[in-house]
Length: 69
Image 1: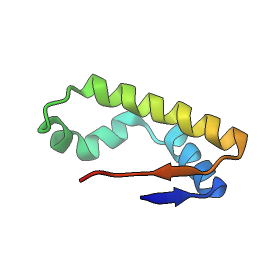
Image 2: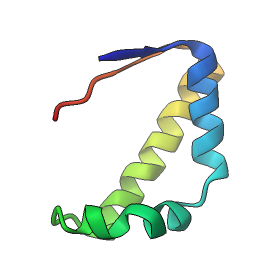
Image 3: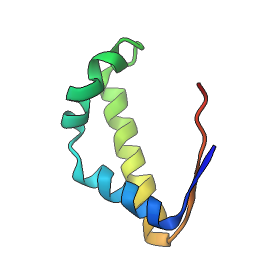
């Protein structure tokens, strides 16, 4: 579990809007594809994250991130 303060949320939002999904996919797509999800699902997830972080940054919110491994 980690807390992204509002400045970190803004940085994440800027990153997600500035980086091309295709560029990200070219780096890690083969590994993600091996998990069995089609590329389109990752693209939709990326778009959802862009929207979420943009809204949170605009509101000045912090974000709690939780990762299950």
